[in-house]
Amino acid sequence: MNISVIPPWVKWLAAVALIAAVVAAFYAYGQQQFGLGMTSERATWLARENGALTKANGRIKELEEQARTREHEHAQDMAVASAKYQEDLKHEKAAKDRVIADLRRGDLRLRIPVTCPVPAAGDRTAALGTGPAGRDGETRAELSVEASEFLVGLASEADEVVHQLTACQAVVNADRKQPGEKQ
Image (cartoon, helix red, strand yellow):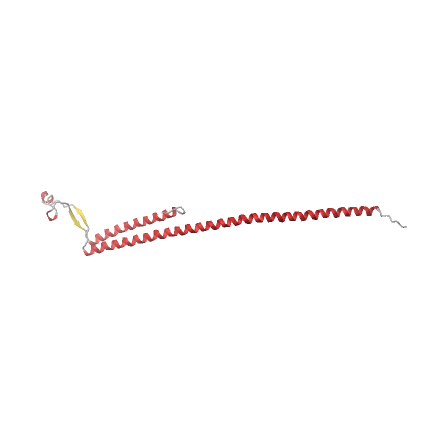
């Protein structure tokens, strides 16, 4: 019978190989579990971030719609102010044209109060007497058609400035208006 004896160095080599295999198996198992943990954590993180992103996008859409509504209301307010201003200017021009036409036809006359000078002969009683047509009162002078037209035009320009300033106030008030507030 031949019994062979295993040399001791082979026993040691087998033990080291077995220990290395166990360590390698634990290392591989740890790496696999670490990878699964990372995948699980990443999935949780992505779900949380996607939820927050969806919520933020919904809020952005809501705010954009509110802004568009406010812009639309503001544009309507500006259109109303502009239309009123244009209408006021049209009425002002028509009124000026009517008055000038009346002046040119002679239907309307502009007069201003005047004082009569003392007569050269020194007769103060004639100056203090009655006014035109035998009535007491102040003396009036009629303006020429050209002077009347100039004064009516000047008054009309002043009225246009008033309309322009009113329109400016409407624009400023519309700009300062809070969302949802009526003017």
